[in-house]
Image (cartoon, rainbow, N blue to C red; front, side):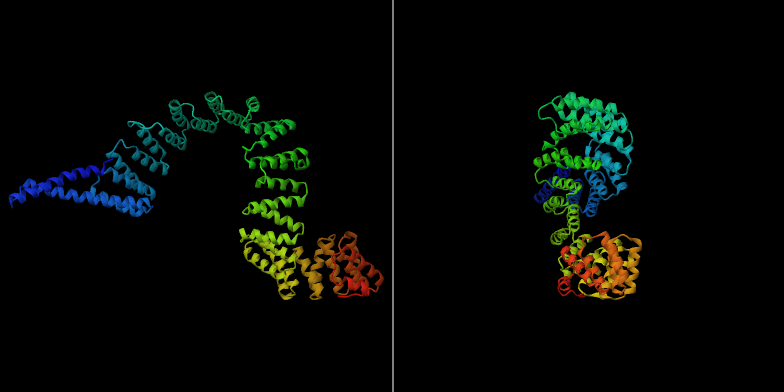
Length: 587
């Protein structure tokens, strides 16, 4: 490129002449100037001013370009070109580069071509022009530009890499292979070159040639087992198991073998239904700290997905123990242990592992979901509230965590705080009808516990607007109305609807019987509670309510027996002791 320093050399000559002329005029005190000397002086002055102005604009443009103020840089470079004239390759190049950054491709192309016309052996200009063409998917033009670049003196052969990629983009894989062949001839069987050739051969379905390329790497690097494993992996991907197997078994006998060898052999023997050999190689692979724990855990998960019953098999237990030893307290292994325990239906043990994992990796939302889901299922309100609060510190906008938090608080009878949690979650679930329904039901439960009955009824009504057949909303709402002895006809409609749909569900039958009791239909209520107790005898509340019905029917000795059973089982109201002691119904 034309250098600014050349301009300064010319300017220095002109300035020297200018100063010398002035000295002579002073000594001779000659007022008349020679015409030639005057013209030279004027030219020197103009060139000096022009060069300085060009330099100022050029430096200013470079400054703007360095801080990505490309529009301002473009303006400065254009001023520099205007002052310097169109013969400056450097300024044209900077203009092309800036227009390229601004996605002004036609202008960028024009400036790049102007620069190239002035410096035909400048590789940077060729590269810029090729990039301009490539960004417009003008791959043929980009290819021709690179071919010209490779003809200039001392052009690096490495440019064949870029040319090969352009041929691939232009859907000419054979030309790309020619480029890689030139590179291989110059550099030898280098890994990156061979891999690129393999990639192309696989794309054009010439698998055998891709395999031959892999063999080249092995021949050139006989002591590097990694290339053998790579080739074997490729063979397996193309169902050439019998070719891969001897390669891998030979490496497996070597000391410090690539651990991937064991994984590939384990897969081969698993496909051959040879579980003993597959397990042997898996154990070897799992003992290696060089294999990513995530990959190991993935293998176990794939086995369990395919055959979940294997979770209880000794071999899975042994593999998990090996993983624990190789990667103690690794998050993925903790999750794997939890998954295995969950498949085994050991929910408490699974919860313990998930909890450790959640505390180690607090930003893992999936683990928090499993922790909170299990705590809710196992009815652990204290830990549910605690862990839901921890989860919300990291995921405050995830509505289901507010539901878990509220449920935990409600389970601890902290209804006021639970109410706030449910209200927050409801606002976050505005676009999720099912989740919003859950929040309305829980708001209804909580308002009822706080004896804010108007708001409780409104919440249940909102829930039933979303889903008029929702069993939980129908059950809770009708039960609370029966307890309060309010809107009993409405409660009866809801309870009847439930028992028609779920005639054998003891929870819904219990509610139906309780609504009948509230309406004073004790005979029918008795029949319903007898049906309930045929289906479930583990809930003291059912026996207590059955006793209440019997008392109302005058069967007081039988009522006392039911209350005593209820007391023994548990889950009763706070009035149970008073009922038993006084042998009298209290409501």
